[in-house]
Image (cartoon, rainbow, N blue to C red; front, side, top):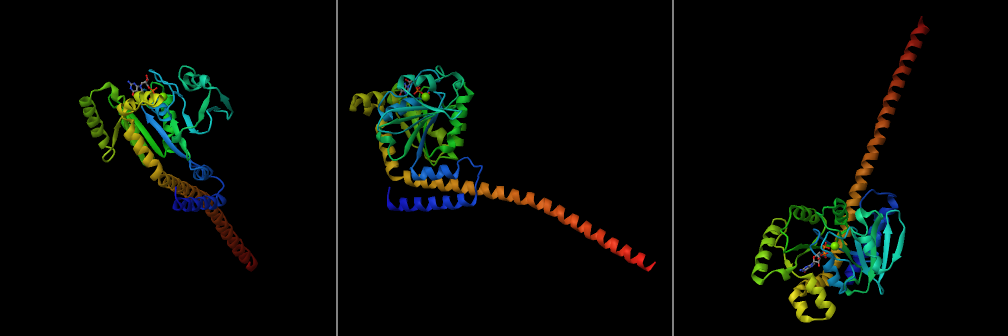
Length: 333
Ligand SMILES: Nc1nc2c(ncn2[C@@H]2O[C@H](COP(=O)(O)OP(=O)(O)O)[C@@H](O)[C@H]2O)c(=O)[nH]1
Ligand SMILES: [Mg+2]
């Protein structure tokens, strides 16, 4: 990212410091402290979203080229998993009580799956994984969410928590399931928060070329009601992972992942900085609006006793005038 980006970043950090020194607290979703950290570390959240079983986790595994996260035929991930760059694989489970612990890969399923951790009885808040993938360089974080519309309501709630943290979204639908009302509602909500959405139509390996063309057209028509000229990437995350793992170019080509990866790389090289600056500026503005609202409320609450006090002083003055008047009358009697 160039010098213009660094300059803008520096200016925004100064603004955050100035605002933070004026106001101690702010009840916003994303605090000034978080926004500063986001800028300083270039934290860029790519949130993988979609209904359960669409292949979200498979896509993340394909991207990093490794069977790292558990995949299943039943709704599986009940916990959000956050992947960041690290020279070595390290898995940290954080609990709702603030405690965090490192676990080995073979224990991951005990915390992030509905089977190993039904209804999140273990009270896991998030799982952090570091991994040496080129897609995770320069502050990119890939966030795997449980997916909306699962029979488990708490999974949907977890997915929704991540909408407002997303800088870009991979939204997955799949050819074996028609697009649901849940998915459309969710997309409407995502639109308000994320400026960049990649639409992926997964499991293309189930269809012939003609069927796939029809399926892409169908999804495009639906999405066009919400987004202007949406681009859809038909892929097979399963084939992509198998091709990338075995370095088989024929399978990688067949998976359709190449065009998506090319556009993703271009976006990360050319647009990521702008999106990040925009996201932080928007959040600063939102925080300022919230602060303005709070200051306004406080002034109103101060004004009420002040008016009361004025009324009481007036009453006192009237009473005093009355007594003085009475005294004067008495004197003349
Ligand atoms: N045929 C086929 N199956 C896939 C593909 N991607 C994922 N799957 C399967 O779909 C199921 C759900 O995948 P998963 O990644 O766990 O979905 P998630 O719930 O959205 O994270 C698993 O059985 C995967 O093996 C694909 O491209 N083709
Ligand atoms: Mg999953």
